[in-house]
Length: 254
Length: 116
Image (tube, rainbow over all chains, first blue to last red; front, side):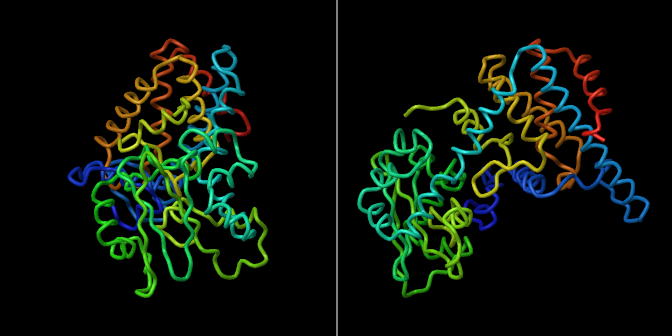
């Protein structure tokens, strides 16, 4: 279901609840993202002997090498033919690697952690504060222009929800996880945020108030999580690496 | 809002069986060849050599073939292998290179020290 904890990390089950075949394939994506192919796929039978394991290792190594060769061949052939340039490919990749992840939001939050004045400015006027940081062009424009930050504190935990992914502050957080668009998640998060957060593995003490912010076409909210304990000696760049998209949506601690 | 092709292309896959794996909201690649295959596919579609939707149909078909011929929990699944299959099919279908050219070049590349 949309609020299962594993999805908050892997975003790996983007499926309708009634489609079990797709659910399986999403799990495989999780496997694929964390491990190199580990066994041959002949009939699905794994014979647990040293010899078989050796063959499996050989098989996956060969398979990996073949993929490397094919990818290299394809790119070099297309470049040689003048169809693409290495630069085109790099431009595409750098977009994903520098602009489409939660990197920008992480930089904003890291600055807020080390600079209380910036944090206050961020809460007071989010776009103006973000505009002062050296972030890629477009961060403050487009969908970023209506962004509002809310800060967690020992007394308040903030959670951001929205029905439509179009209301997601993607310049800050990267692409939204699928469950964010899930109507069930939104409805339940509005009605019983504490229970939903618990399903995400986040237990909020009864004494802490939970505020739920519904992003809309007018305002896209994001959360400034609390700085974790034991990070006093870390630099701004090191702190930025700790910050996740989930943390900035209020469904995880940092 | 202004939409970059790259953003549109990947967003269009959300909620579909062909969507790429992610970690913490970001795309993740286990190996450099996966990253390269990803970049080449997007670059080709961005430059108009084939429609993104056509590439996706190849990808959906290769994933479906794999799922039809393997156990559902087969741990040897690799998303970007299917991506590479789909990319080769899309490149051949668009007339950018022939199947033979790809095979010959891949065989030569396999002899390269970096592929050993």
